[in-house]
Amino acid sequence: MKKIAIVIILILASCAAPKKCCGQDKKIDFKQIFKFGTVYGAVNGGTSLSDIDVYSVTNGLETTTIETPYDYSLTLGIRKLKQFGYQPKEAFKRGTENSFSDAATIGNWENKVEFLFQHEYKRQEGEEYFDFHHMLRYVADKWLVKAEYLRDGFADVSYFESSQRYRKELKNGISVNVGIVQRFAEPYGFDPLEEWKLSNGNLHYTFLAIEEGYTMEFDGEGGVEYFDPQGNSVATSTEVWEAVVIPTALADYTEKKRNELDNVIQHSWVVGFDYYKYTKTSWLHAWGSLMPLHYSDYENEFSYYNFNGGQWKDYSFGLIYGHWFNKNIGIFVEGKYNKYWNREWHGFSAGINYRVF
Image 1 (cartoon, rainbow, N blue to C red):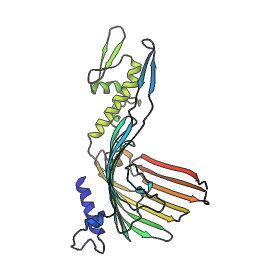
Image 2: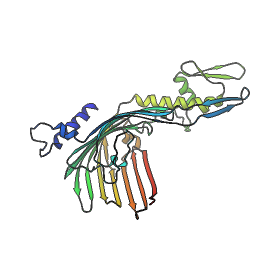
Image 3: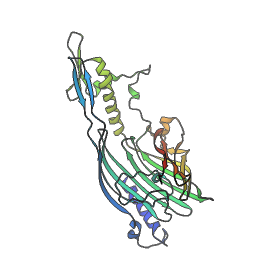
Image 4: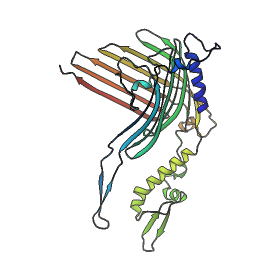
């Protein structure tokens, strides 16, 4: 993965040098590439879920308080993305910037390398994640290349994607593009629990748990106690075993089996469009990409083509719209949506503003 990223950086850097083409034997001007870029580090935090009291009457009235530790994030990154007209200017980069326009295929800075490299270690609602977002983008008159490496633990998605596209400028801020995409990701579609399913669709969950190290002891009077792989007692009734312990065992097993598999590379055709029009009172920025045909190693049993039973359609799109009806009232709608390998992640924001004079 690192070698791929380095190659892409060198290609983009060599193409971005002003008044130089990729075929000329001239030095790369790294100062020019990183000019106007910002290196930043930040610590952010805040209150998480409030404490929850859980009551039990098994051995008399008992109260247990579930505490969720505060949320925080440690962020380190470098970015050079020219802002669109509708984006507010900020004095400092805090690492919490999440403009939907970062997902657009085309940026607002033609014939320049744009990039974002951000790493973030965070705790959110008691769960810890190590996320990162790497992005390189270069747009020329007739073509564009973009590479992205994303890991979003909260959305449970991780992949590397690069694309090379021919683009055609139309009228009124519209452009269309067509090209190829390479994606490198875990074998989405793989179901580790499939081998444990019975003919009636039910799951052999008890045998699976025993295989993973769970044990049980019977007291000879109809009672049973369940223990986890470390020997800790986790349940004293079948109800708790099935409702609490088994879901945890299945989740751990599924994650372990997926982590054991190698990532799969996949090639796709892509078509897309971009539209951008901005004035001080109204703006519209829209983009989208569709991958209708795919090629991967069909002989690989973990290929998504085999899991899906044939071709499928992956796509992504985004929209940013804002309009001031007069000096007082304005509305905005923003959002993006991705669907890859039948996995969805998205975000949106909409509202109304009223300026008081």
